[in-house]
Length: 440
Image 1 (cartoon, rainbow, N blue to C red):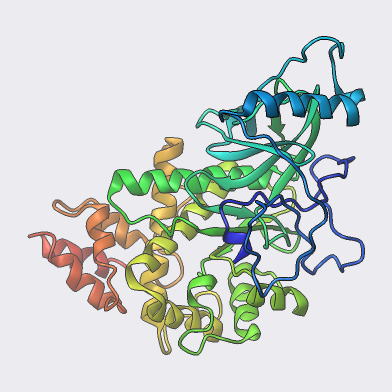
Image 2: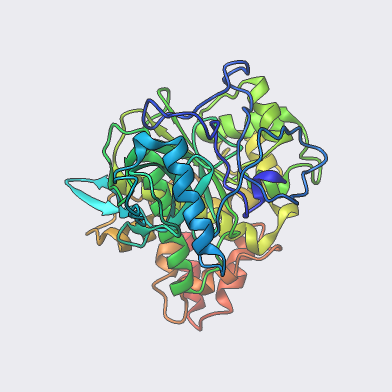
């Protein structure tokens, strides 16, 4: 699919347009706001266009490639064309050789009273059809891979992570969320995502998913799929944050999970969001998300958003172990009985085991990452699945978090099966029984 082509830089606005308002994406005015707009890019001369996607070739162009044997001649051609067609953007005397510069800078997001780097996300710089990219470091520093003659170039932050996962914005689920900084010096620019910025939620969730991937490596838990898609939305009708891990792009169309109403009910039951019919149609037709994170408008609790994101990512790791058939049973329970049901009914065990795992891991990783004292943000006896059981089990000699994860097999569909699996990892079997029986 075109959006999965890692060789293309997709723009949501024509490359000869100027961005007048920072942060906002361009939507073709002839297309309804909640439908997919045109995407724009530059392709090689021999590019093979997908047969099932409409496209238009707008123009032909010559883009000199750097670090090639003929770059000196191409370089002079580029400089001359800049003087001919963009003289107002050149900063030197035309009689002298113009200076090139490689843009560098830092991207930050507000965290409490401090700024922290936006980690491993893409920074894109372009002057019309000449496009350069770079990745931020863990501290937020970036340097792109091309140099520019013109004094000002366009900067965009694309919430596509170097590890492969992507963050989508409100209804922009065809392309990663993008924040258009606008024109700045060719030498570089910095960006600070404050609380009121449309990009704050995207940057925060990006950092949370990135940290979750790091924790997986250190704790011997399988990472979510590298091409994970996390859809981040805001809403007024929820309290703080909510989420769901339908893994739709992995489960859609399988095992009877194939109607728009099923997706609508699942997302509504788990996140409180009601999707318009045409939005649902776009999701099922073009690009299904894996995770959905919904953040209340005006809610800026960085730690809590991390906890919610860790929770949903833990479900994605669980999916990696059990597969789509298991997951559809999990989804169907939520569709039938609501967010978590009451522990009864068909497939209740799928939900109970999954939510026990997700709740515990979300809280554990939050506590460790933010070095928080106590467990005030964690409810041991939440609902009927009592995630505090896993917290107790995690402290039993011989059992690690990785051991707990390894017990989440495709046959672990009830609490009793989970307990049986856990007992294979320790000689203190009675402590597991005591931990489970301590809950009503």
